[in-house]
Image 1 (cartoon, rainbow, N blue to C red):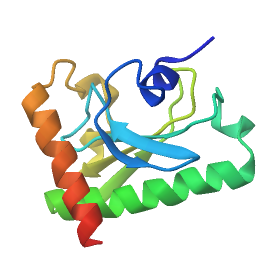
Image 2: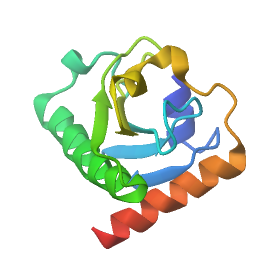
Image 3: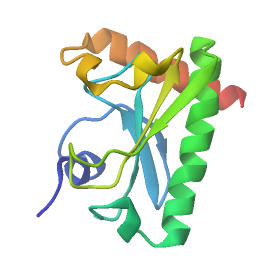
Length: 133
């Protein structure tokens, strides 16, 4: 069964993409922990990160590393958070976001109704930071 991420990757659902290549894409979360919260997702439908081929998972982490540098730069954050939870959507995804403390890692604090204009602005800030890097 196709995941919501597969539908976003196929263009069947909207996504605010900040990275796309043949194997991996990154787009903003619709329930961000912090502004700039980005999901790094392989195009292949794989449920758990431990089931991904090491080469593909390595590419996901390399993209997450680059996105992490971009979100730190864009928000002048002291850290870039990285989480792999895997319970929300049955499709491997790495959460990358600017972080100032451990509270930023709490999914119970995620913004369930973010302003679409704020999401658009966050996506553009990440794209600009990626261009600078």
